[in-house]
Amino acid sequence: MSNLTKHIEGQLDRWFAALKSCNPAKVTDLYAKDAILLSTLKGDVKKGHGKIHAYFKGAFLPKHPIGKVVEGHTRVIGGTAVNSGLYSFKIDGKDGKRITVQARYTFVYQWLGNDWKIVEHHSSLNPEG
Image (tube, rainbow, N blue to C red; front, top):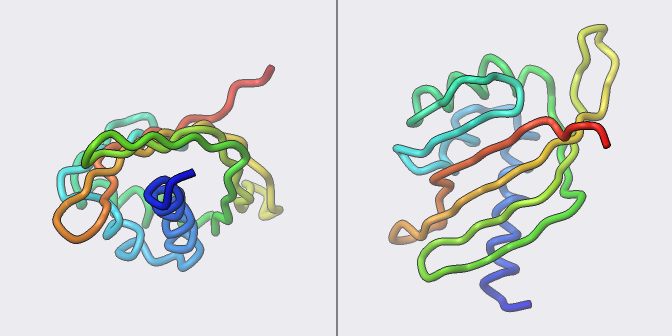
């Protein structure tokens, strides 16, 4: 595995750490200004920092998510990288108890001058079976 591939996989660790902070600005900062998010919990398309910030602030971070990769795959193509696979989250359930949610993910990163930023992020609940 190349150092660049390891670095890209580390971007997901950065994202998990930002989620754990419960700070929507810290999470949103990992995304490009015009990024697109297709989120796990809400079906609409979130384009740009404003909508991405609102999603994390109102829908996801209040559930206190703690995530981990179950299976990940990374490809680097020039100044773009794709990391996709399966991840799981422990979140607050409706009754206040912690539950585990399994999901599929794809993050597309682009090198934007001095950092890798998320330009596309798709996450969906993992279907049974």
